[in-house]
Image 1 (cartoon, rainbow, N blue to C red):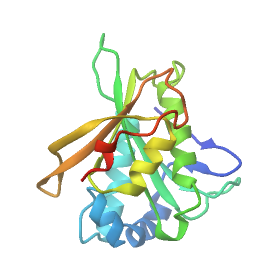
Image 2: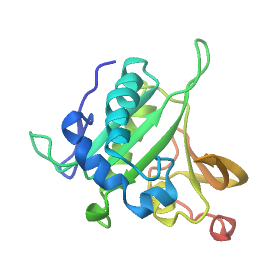
Image 3: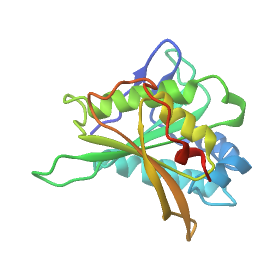
Length: 199
């Protein structure tokens, strides 16, 4: 599949390119991104180049991982403000499922851009004319409140806390998990249970 642009009047999502490598390397050196994501740490320019040239390119070519850079709206791609992507799992004859992932640059936080970008991606992912996913899952290490707020705002429903579920640089971490099924309300229709905030 060829990469394409998703956009609203608030964000523009386009595939990250070699021109973004330095900015991605700068942002992914942020301690919060290292703390809550699976990016290499310490993060180098070579890591960024490999992400753009291999993971992003192969993901689109193999129609398995679909990744966009979050940018300001406009006709020309501006600096990377964040990253959002969705995976696709499932073989022939199996209804596909996916997982949403994202990060936001420190200088772009608090503006709702990650929520806006993720909403665009989830909308496309569950659309029968898009990926037609039967479910989009979200998971985060317990304590990642910023990621939790995004999932909650998008209408994801809290499923539980799984102990030592997500691997992060070789160490299993406790994870919050939630899911969005097509037809669920696309807004926080219910507060997440107290268990979601317990740890």
